[in-house]
Amino acid sequence: MHYIEPHIHMISRTTDDYHRMAMAGCVACTEPAFWAGYDRPHPEAFADYFEHLTSFERGRAARFSIAHHCWLCINPKEAEDVAFSREVIQIVRQFIDRPGVVGIGEIGFNKNSRNELTILEEQVALAVELNQLILVHTPHMEDKLKGTRLTLDVLDAHGVSPDRAMIDHMEEHTTRLVRDRGYWVGMTIYPDTKFTPQRAVDTIETLAGDRLWINSSADWAYSDPLLLPQTRFEMQRRGHTEAMIQKVLYDNPLQFLSQSGKFKVTVT
Amino acid sequence: MTDQSHTCPMTASNVIETYFLEHRGKLLDIAAFLDRVDRASGAPDAKGDFLIKALHEGLRLVASDEPGRARRLLESLSDPTNEPIPAAHTKSASGAYDEKS
Image (cartoon, rainbow over the protein chains, first blue to last red):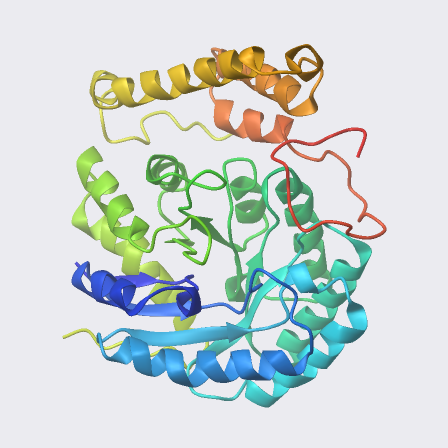
């Protein structure tokens, strides 16, 4: 069965990972702009990063028949420096019309600070101005619930259509909050700090599989790009239908991402 | 709260049979972790560590008979405030909210 990996940081992964993902059925992925593990010393470093995402990574994925797409932004971990962030936002404008760029992301909060709020508001306004999809990063662990509430208030205040915003890294205490306000629910299968495959499937069951996607968010930290096939196995083990599994792993991300007008996937 | 009964396609006995050993092992890991803290130097001070306190509160919630244990556990670990903080002085999260932070 084919699947779409809608949130993965392939810049941090090896070509072997593309190979293994392709063999497991991955036909497309989207890569949000994120923190490199250190703060970039100059805004211009983001031009190099966006160049990599929109050119090299697309070609590397294509060797394995995986359609690579990306999201652009200044990530929340580097958003504490407002002046720096505003320079990066200008660079985002230069790259946003490139092929394969599906929206603004992953934006949001990290520590729920006032400066993070300022930059989140400016990037949401940018997405509205440019009619771009939005991918939201929600904070880690004890900061997630508060950050999710603050983020939803920003999206509502800017008149973002809930159909066009994915609120990612949701867990059991935030999924209903997001669903009740009409937004899409993203769930990340990530060891230790987010979902196990078992808990993700529990939540898929309680939400009936509607308006949600799952992803591995695999990056440079302890993570695994094959956690979507593992989650597929968990659904099969419980007796979910093939139609339900396809809905979660392919149809839902296809529906959401196709709104960008730039998400292309060919399944042979 | 929406009624979530019968949303899992397995029977309860199948769930227990399939997952019991995995979760027995996870429970033992928690017990061994707390024993490890007790065996370490500085153990008396660790009794007041906010992370250990949060874990004990979490175990109390897990032992409840009421559904929604995972949600309530995560809520108990979360920052309950509503206003943005003045500035971020770190990038990392600890796993539980520290009232003194």
